[in-house]
Length: 107
Image (cartoon, rainbow, N blue to C red; front, top):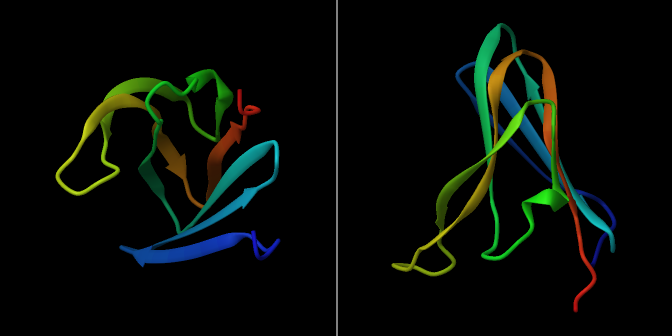
């Protein structure tokens, strides 16, 4: 890591501004999403897991989460089935949501 500042980005579309920041330490990765705007919106955030990853190490913040089957593509023209943690629901904006991922010690 070259910087302790969070990695951050922003997208504006259809009257909503989505700001995402990602922070990490030796113990966890945190993904924080801030949605600015007005009204009620259906929101979905998907976190594909590496094959064999433990979904119990992932906590969703701000919305209920479910485990679904999905795809992971690490290379062009290749895909593998994997588990996807999905946070989905209706939110009144402005709102905050995100993920906390606990990192395990390498075995």
